[in-house]
Image (cartoon, helix red, strand yellow):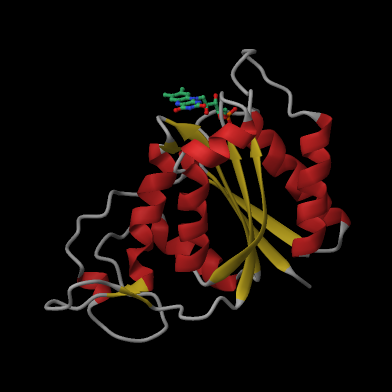
Length: 197
Ligand SMILES: Cc1cc2nc3c(=O)[nH]c(=O)nc-3n(C[C@H](O)[C@H](O)[C@H](O)COP(=O)(O)O)c2cc1C
């Protein structure tokens, strides 16, 4: 049975990203996959200290972080999953700080010993698949062009060894206090999740 993991970088309950992730959960379950959601807002994750302890030992396996926090459980879940749903709103042209903090802690997936100019990805080949979901106040097509959000979600997928197979950028999500995910976007999310399963 396919095991999926969704990582949700939204700060608020039942906003655009939560609704998209809920839709993904319903679709995955209806398609016979198991799915777990990590709400980053509920997870105790420290900031990366840039000590690079985790990047010194070569190999495919994620390095060992000095922090003893929720990220250990997150890494275990990433390793156990077959596919991913990576989702974040756009805040100040980028993924949320919540999602960025998670991304920086993925440095365990880099081999970067002292003396090397640049890190190497431990996962050289993408053996898993991911779908990407971003949201913004601006229209989606503009968000995709001008914001870093989608690129950052792609980098996240690459880092953990996954190939993005589809993405949606849902815009105009800030006109109401409680936005409703448009039906068309709900259908897009369903179709993407079916592809992932
Ligand atoms: C602090 C902050 C910064 C934001 N920056 C942007 C931005 O740069 N561009 C944009 O189009 N929308 C921006 N927005 C709007 C959010 O992207 C939008 O409300 C969000 O995608 C909805 O996601 P959610 O419903 O899951 O919270 C910002 C919102 C906040 C609160």
